[in-house]
Length: 511
Image (cartoon, rainbow, N blue to C red; front, side, top):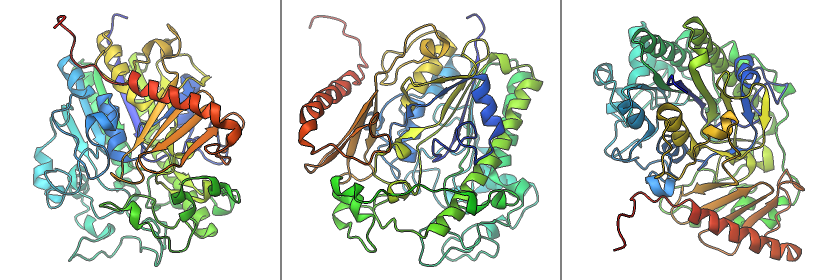
């Protein structure tokens, strides 16, 4: 390889691995499907954490959350931690991040808190550097959430939408006339009207498409290789989107997942508690509430409506993926651009009686869509069962750009495996959930057939045979006839954790 490739990472937020047209005929994603046809789809890719900040921080550092330090949301990723952006920038790449970052919390020493979030004069002047990215254009909110601001709000205002605040949920002391009304006595994501009156062309999804295309154009004009992370905030709830996407799908065509009667009786106690009207999760909230530690009982018809909007959000952003792919074609850059499409973690749409997310390490939460396209180098139209992890993206991108394989990261370069020059790099994936420092504090180990989850406290856990029980309804943790097998898998889990320790400093002498 003589010419350095451009690298384009496209991510969604909280996308279930079946929300792709190539595997699900109920949803239309023609442009993402095109990536599948022209590249390789990996059906066994996993997130390093089912929480936004730690997973995203792992993407850019090549480290697990327990090592990069941003172990949950509300925790800042240290700006001293080396990132793929900084490495590639130093290697001569033009590096950019457009869309959602979420490396910092909504409080403390953060650029993603109020009132900084809405200091639009600041954001008009500040475009980086930021976590190694030379150029950034950020949006912090999901749908109509109140923490809208940054470059996206400035763009709306510059485009003539001076009353943009009216379309978003109000901050304390504000009013909001055009934001969707929140459903009463319902979870935070629920909206009475799932159709958002925000003009379609001023939604953050086309903004991200527009700004990504502009970044690529500028890199091409400068004849400079680029690394761009295009980061869509959808289809993360709240479930609301402008027309025609809000009603693109008929709720009656939706088939949410379901719970199998009695399946949680074998699981850790917090699983069964989700099926209670008013569960007492007090022991699990130390010091802050953990995502998903509440009742997951939810009206079936409402879930169908939410699912239809969730699919609409995906189809909307798929259109912008097409815009970006068309720009690469127009600039004759497609052949020289390595593209990865994925998400930060999964999502529940009724599976196991669960909604949204939480400390429930099922495949729905940990497994992610993962597509790699690099014409002439990565096989086209291939589907692979090789295990992948988002923690591998940084070392793989670095090797693709510099031809040097990092040896001080926890992620593994997948470049040879992607391009067919070598065997699969991974025999296992690790997923950490540190969202609450006491409970639930859980680590999962996934290999070819078996998956096991161990908690920091308690004698319970989950142990599934993914071959015989792909729906994960028969927890073998306490099964007497699986005791020896469980010991073997636990041993391999401990060995995998030891193998994943980063050795940052070379040994220079005997003593």
